Image (cartoon, rainbow, N blue to C red; front, side, top):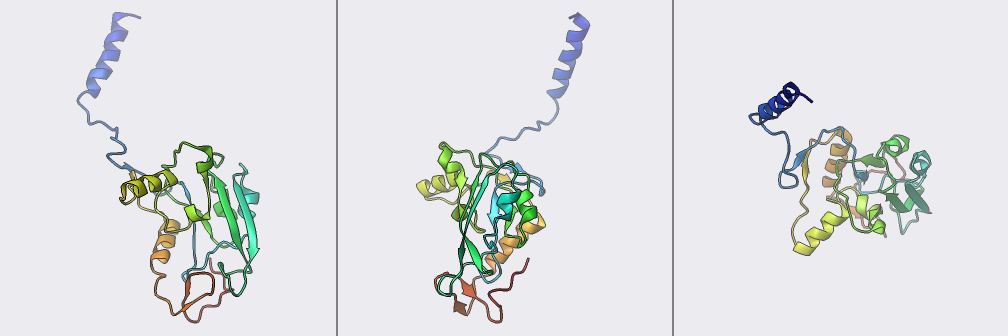
Length: 204
């Protein structure tokens, strides 16, 4: 290597000293994500609070990484959780196997599963990387380690990113926020039902 090549390399280094850094001091400074980024899954609800998932397992069948496990159960008059005849009594995703390809989102006939923007899921134990329905239902903020840390410090979940959600995610979040006022409660489900809405009506 000659002196000229060394001078050229040093010239590049010196030139960068006077430009604005592009690095981000994460997590002190939140990372800015693009709306199209696909992260941790969100299980959505209808406007009346019923889960959109009907336990059909099409998402599990479409998953190329075999990361999804679903067990279905029948809805009953005293335990109605979804708008269909069945609901997912168990819904699990192994985040270590998931490749976040979005095939589950495409395969779902009711729009029950969408990919959100959360990516901060690093954890210490393998079993903690299996997320259940209670970890992914719309309205749950943060990943498992973030919620544990928040509970330990009695503080709100702090996310290390900012993003303008894509339309599907924003609609699911807003629908969950606006579903509080109701006039009746479905026995055994703990959710309210707005008037003139049939339980078996499945809307996308």
